[in-house]
Length: 313
Image (cartoon, rainbow, N blue to C red):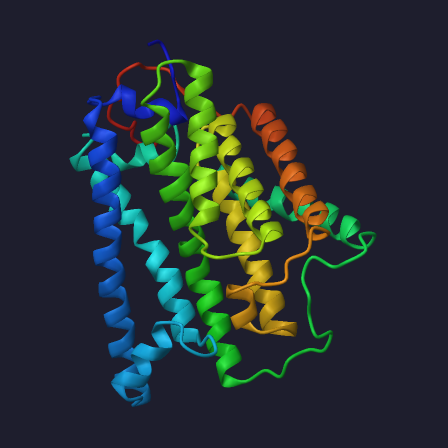
């Protein structure tokens, strides 16, 4: 094999049919263990700093009642731990450097990531334009600015500091490890690409739990676009930028004009929200692919066998 696209990088490592199967099971087990550790650590922190009874804290962290900053922190960190989990599985099971989960050059391309954030902001402009003409808004709000309280401050800190880790964790899990695990199974390039994009997108939408059909379709479409981006741009950077900005926007609007409980557990979705969100995703997809080609962003690994990552000069 003269070159390897992102979704087939595992075939350039120590490939065996059983490795993806063992790897997926290992990732699930590791993530569950790490999530328990995260929950206990946050609970202890809340008990020590706030003096809240342990029973009440664990009720809060299980999602009982209104969403609190501590619960959002657990959700964000619970997804963030997938990053070290997939790194460890890539190294132990597939005998490949964890950097190959980031991109075809074996690391996060920070300059390209910054460009992707700028492109995601441009896509938001198109979203705002479309949002002004659809019959129903994509996000229902009270229309009045919420009071800034201590809880608002805590939510803001969690959103700014931990939400990027949560978004990156989901990308490493679905568009990273799972995409490579599925893409490496099939030798036919078209079949491998289709499975590597569609299946992670479907599992990504299902992972958000019970949801109305419009919300499910919206998340499925997001997953399909993010999956296409990782292959067309050769790495996770474009998906991470889009995901982080989307979550910042959704949580920010909820914090300012709505409530976090509804933001984390959306109901009453409307099909009229799809033109707005699809506009954002598709405009961003077009911009990211066009700019990546103009910049000469690498989309394949030229060597058939993965070699150590080149040192930066």
